[in-house]
Image (cartoon, rainbow, N blue to C red):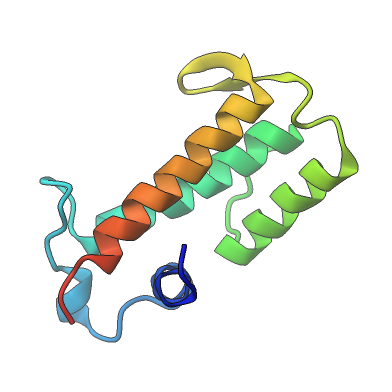
Amino acid sequence: MSQSRHSDTHRYATSGPPDERQWAAPTPCDEWDVRAVVDHLLDLQRNFRVTMTGEAKPADSTFRDDVAELVDAIEAGGALERTVTTRLGRIPGPAALNILIMEHLAHGWDVRSLPG
């Protein structure tokens, strides 16, 4: 992913678009506006953190918190060597990580492809 696209996706995920009009903008996902796409990614990241760490789902955490915990779990070892339980059922850890990566790439594009 180019630095520019990564920066735009990070900006939306951490601080939101500059104005309310952009939050409500439609996306290529027919039923989701920008806010719904970003909410989906934040929820997915939080759920994946729980999946890979085995922790209880935090009531409130930031995107950065969730990413930091996820990276710590992967760096500590074992997280990618086991089978994990997801909404899709039990799958290998690397497959779960691939799903997360694809979700971020696809929905990052959804947000990046908007004009303005």
